[in-house]
Length: 110
Image 1 (cartoon, rainbow, N blue to C red):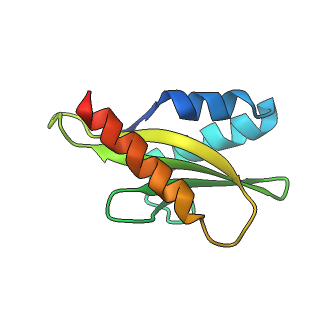
Image 2: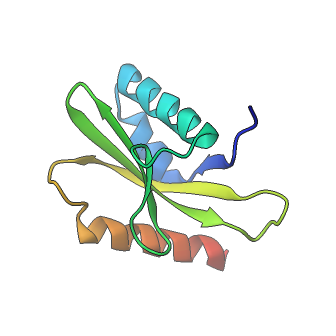
């Protein structure tokens, strides 16, 4: 089966992933690959008009990677992971959504 989209990690997302243990990282990559093949709102969910989140739960810890779509290249739509957090509260903090929006805006300015 062909993936529906590609995932590109921006610097902040790479930095977040580098701090995780290898098993948590593996689970996140597994869920990202799964989300690319099937539409599962448990894994990939819209937060705002522009920002989405990849969701992973591993050993009781909830990880979130924030992303946005890059539709400037008509041949390929990319999802760019902006940054990540270890979720500690039931709702995604507004500051994290705002951070993702700022990273997205900076990306399109380049």
